[in-house]
Amino acid sequence: MNLDISLYFTAPEIGLTISGLLLLLVAAFGGDKTARMVTILSVSALFGAVAYTTNLLVNPAFELGGEAWAGIYRMDAFGSFAKILIYIAAIGCLIVTPRFFEENGGYRPEYAIVVLFSAVGMALMVSAVNLMTLYMGLELMSLSSYVLASFSRSDNRSAEAGLKYFVLGALASGILLYGMSLVYGFTGSTSYLGIRLALQDGLSMGATFGIVFMLAGFAFKIAAVPFHMWTPDVYEGAPTPVTAFFSTAPKVAAVAILTRISLDTFGENVIVWQQIVIFAALASIVVGALGAIGQTNIKRLLAYSSINNVGFILIGLAAATPAGASAVLVYLTIYVAMSLGAFVAVMMLKDAQGSQIENIASMAGMVREKPLLAWCIFFLMLSLAGIPPLFGFYGKFVVFQAAVQADMIILAAIGIAASVIGAFYYLKVCKIIMFDEPAGEVGGESSMANWTILLICSLVISPLGWILTSPLIALANRAANFLFFVI
Image (cartoon, rainbow, N blue to C red; front, side, top):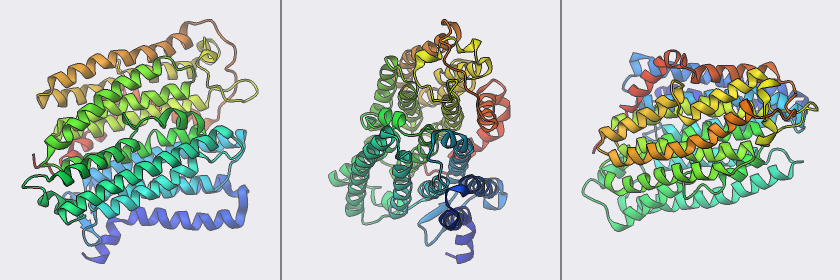
């Protein structure tokens, strides 16, 4: 493969890597006082990556995509679309970071740099067409995530979250790597194309076990049942900007690579992995909904909400059709806005002394104290519940539509019924903040950066979002067609 083309296709990842290394030198020589400047420069680098990747996505000259670095990396519409979502989520999380760490202590320039390197790992994951490239990207993302989870060194909850995430993440990576080794051993190839060709004539028992182990490893990364146990503890213990990051960018990357692996590499063996995905989808919807009902901490509630939403996303994957893949990308787009907005709103829940409020009971009647914040949370909760005319309804609609079109009517019916359970705890939060007697605890002021991100997310999930994001939805539909559907 031509070196110039390889460099051109991977320019966003190369640019972010160089930016991260240079900013690391700035942090080393400048110390903690450079934290805000490093964050601003990191956001600028990510904006540049978004602009460059968008050009690759919409430029007719690259409509068919292309391979780089001797076939271990592929630039196509699917990967480019996922990377844009990843970069945008990282930008949103970095913008709201400075005020949080300045108020709670521990604001250091390394934070933004670690986020940059994590974004590079995720970008490599979604564009990988070789198991080795996939694993390198996955580990770069994971190692960065372990550092982020325990970033608040003075907070015991953060240290606990980092340790739990590291131990369970290492286990999941080992399971995934073992699955990859089995697939390689029984197919003789690490490239997606080579594996697909080797499995055309059927699966051996060893290759089947390899697929199962790989799916188990990915299930941990997306927090799907039964590998969800780390999510509530890590989401609660990690600093809230980190939790916002975990619930958006890595989720997009893991779901995107799972979709590519399932529909591209194992596209001719749908019957093997489809039943696993259906089980994980239904179990995640039910466990996420039931687990959230008794929660009193808003971050733990949103953790179970994340598990619940992963279940709906997997319904689109289970359909194993172009419409299903498109539904996955559409749902991810909407979910990034909903999840990022929800966690930014949580960051803005502060008492008069500026301390964070995470207890749901403390939010009682806050519409009388902070009406704009309360209304934003109200609409975000309704959108997460999938109540029309908010945009969250459209995400659920497209995945159920894809399931029905794939003759999975029972799966869609069970998913719709289970979504009613999930609506309960969202409506419970809405009732507490809108109709209960004021608790008088929410009174702190928030920065303009927080308000900007929150209002943008609220606008996206509003009925107006259907119009504003229509070009993005069209790109999602086109991007899904670049996967290989040999079914």
